[in-house]
Image (cartoon, rainbow, N blue to C red; front, side, top):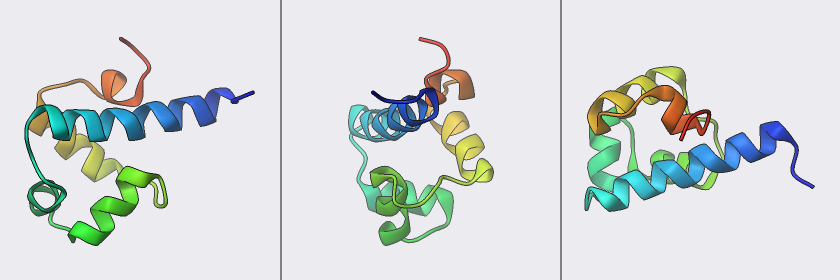
Length: 75
């Protein structure tokens, strides 16, 4: 059974990828928006590294969504 934290982590990872794909963007394009490498962005998207707050804020602004939505706290 997934704990609440694991479920939230899975939600934000899935949402990060879904938002990117829904906007027809590559990992390289989003990495450039964040000022990081495609390799590091791929690690965020797989859940190998935690997404820093500064990147969360940037992605929310870029996609026009709230952090609650991005993190799966609100539908």
